[in-house]
Image (cartoon, rainbow, N blue to C red; front, side, top):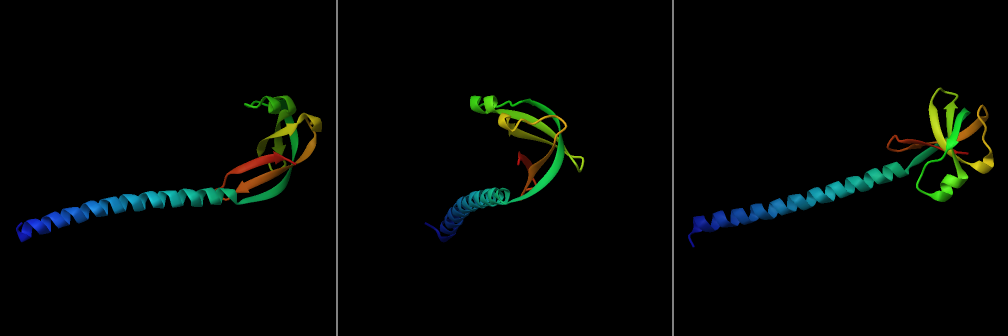
Length: 116
């Protein structure tokens, strides 16, 4: 085999190896980013906020037990925002009641509310 042909073949083989290495590094980087994002969403800051119950309705969901035992409660927070939380029927919430609910601010900026 001539020297020039051998060099071209080696160069092509190295380029193929580099392509596979680049693809592998890209996959690892994407996986690392997903783990970082998941960890970021797991960090939560919880605050207690006050509001007034506006409406109460049936809970919709896939679990029969949750539908039987829960209520969907719409709460108008004192700062003007609106929150929807799930409350147990045993708590006996009524429209117009002033309540405290928990606001959960996740590291990604997602905000969720739970009944206190």
